[in-house]
Length: 523
Image (tube, rainbow, N blue to C red):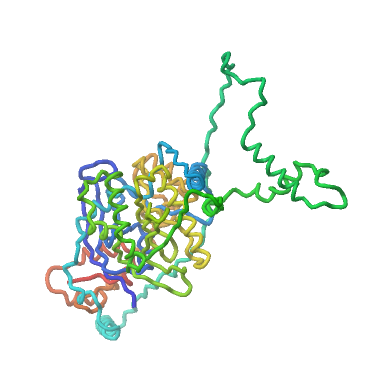
């Protein structure tokens, strides 16, 4: 039986921010997750939480120096922009011909900034001080007995009083709401025609240069004419060439190329390189993950040294494991879920028998959540951050075919106050999470307000409130001495000073639904 067990750490204020270089402007809260169900984590990230290893944290949005808004893309309606297509074509050209022309100004890789994980390390521990036996609840019968005992006691104390029942929220359904998405505009550069100097212009004695596009069009027409079957009405030579071309490409003309058209494009037989993407479960580690662990770690070490300027001795195996391999998410494989199941995975990019990049992802009931990306610095010219994000969007679409509710791609946090972190807003259509009411709002509606204020409430309905807020603190589930009980029962048994303020803070941040499902460890 899967269950979530967490230790709440409380608020952490006044520590350095890696985005604005503030010495003590960051404010967040967090909890150590000993185990967590994928549904609980899904509900938590829909309330602004995010994990780094087994530590799950949430920025205090109206107090922190750089507010971090949860952002999600809607892959079912995603169309690659001009810059995205450029990256995809660059990869195809590299695979086909081995071309490695370096392009300056590559976009930031997905979550290449790791300041949050580092800043939150104040609570990370190699091993919990709590013994594993304490974290394992007693039998279900014992838990039910304790809860029944508490219910009977309350009924005796409140005879004649009708207790209000808090109904659980209905299961979240993944309905893709229509929103006005603004496509990216690219202003064409104006061409300035000048008279060529003597000896520098075109040689009029030679035929004019022809565009490669026109040459390809002519070859295509020639091929179509050769394959055109002879009919009684006439021969292929009697068919108007332009009509033949337009008929052949009519269906494709109205449909822009999808990511899959680029990713799964056929390579020539003599292609220089072959790229393979493997998805391996990282927690619990699969055989494939264990077999490639050392190679994957070496790629991470090179990445940290080249991109983040870490010293050779800093990215240790234990740091790598704790940060990118450990996960509290329980592996789940329901029949109606995706073939790979739910949980934490590494998406490995293999080129000629070696790993060149790894995308760390979580597969959840309604989304694929991007955690981190690291890659071999020798392949920076391939813009692997952008390429991997596009592959993960395509992967989400693939999983959606089996699990219809899985239809979103979460990209972590969008930080408008940090220009380097705005690139995530280029994957459209996308939404930002309102930090007060926890509803999703199209990013186009959020950007104007973010230009005027770092912290914004995106929900324009001023009467709207957090529907998942805590309503009954006594219903919060607690794990105490291996026994599961409601907080109302634990409160009566507790000796020493009251911890109600801390539990109230925890419950208000995780919401009523999660607080009634997850187990809050109390010593």
